[in-house]
Amino acid sequence: MKKTKRNPFEYFGLTPQFIKECDDETLFKIIRSIYRVLQMRYHPDRGGDPKKAMELNLAYENIDYDKDPQRFQQHKKLYLERLSRKTLRRELENLETSHRKLTYLLEVTKERFWNYITAENFILNKHNILDLAIKVKIFDVISHINYSNIVSFKKKDFYFKEFIFSKGLIYRVSSPTERKLILLRDYKFIGSIKRGSIEPWNLMERDIREEGFFLKNYLTKDTFIKEALFYINPEIKLNTYLFFYNFLEPNRVYLEGVALRVEEVKSAEIPQ
View 1 (cartoon, rainbow, N blue to C red):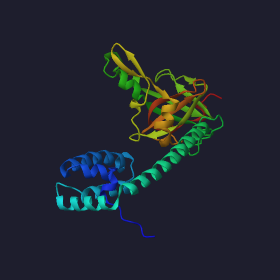
View 2: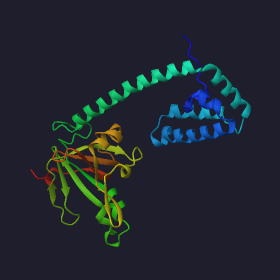
View 3: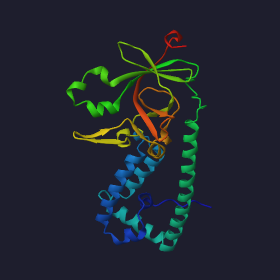
View 4: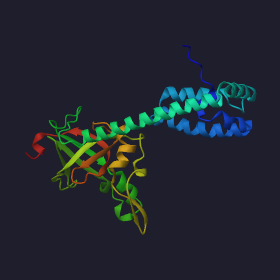
């Protein structure tokens, strides 16, 4: 069966009835607003789909009322002729059925993946942290957001910390000068997320104080599964957000900060 070429109006999710009731100038203003939102969603620089971004741009160019009102009206006429109410209703019902199935499968997949990466026997693949000692320098973005405008917290070292991963254990270096290793019991590295994929400060729990809102260094498990789990990578990579899980607090996911440096550590530096 020959595939019917999509009308440019189809890319913007407006029903024929709505389009029929709008004058051309108002309709184009609405389409332009939708286009800007979708463009941000699909733009490759924001982690979107390059193919969809290109299709969206082409559709918008074909119905750019400011540049070519006649072509806009031609596509509008064809769209209204081809998609009757009955056809649209049937397509919407099919889409709703597919959406329900996909939503269910997505939720099941997320929950199973979460159970997998928080299991005690979960092993990271690429860095093989169970066998290789790795030291990671981290910039604490949440503390910086909370305290950067306070004079007493402006010293540089306050926002930096070091973690060491060795044989499945996680240590934190106490301070740049003392450099004692503190074992973080029941703490586990979940994975990293590339900066730009999410904006974690919008997801973190908040604490209301007299000075205003302070971000906590964790988000809820449900929020993480819904908003961030899709982007998780089991590797420790530079310029990524590092997320951790505490078995004693199963409903929280901790953000330690952004990885600035990753290097191997001599075994003699690690407690045996």
